[in-house]
Length: 155
Image (tube, rainbow, N blue to C red):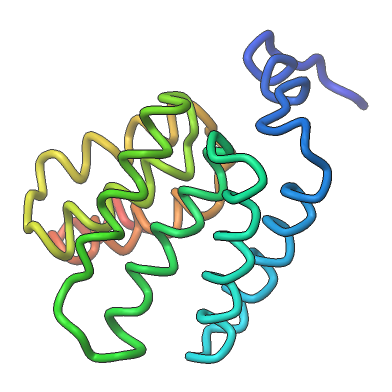
């Protein structure tokens, strides 16, 4: 049985973040490299996201992707917080306030770097409000809730 799409779901399905096909393909390559979670793959992802942004500087998902790269680089490189993570998430949101992934990326920085737990939760709730089926946002929110000792909610 097929269910009807909501207006918000229809709008999200029609949305194009870029008209540049090559930029979009580079973004998809970046997503692939991020999921490999190695120093080399994160470096490659950063490179291809930047190439996508060279083609279309207003491509918000690529900015959100860069935010994730800079955030993940903390654990892989054992460096203190990279301020580019927050700046890239904010850039993505300046382009498109309704980009769920950017709210999630910003929330991680607020939570784990700035220790601003109230704003982090607000960003995670906004991400899920915008895209209730966003698995990335649900995963990060679950980790956030567990870290706050709210284990039942995390489940």
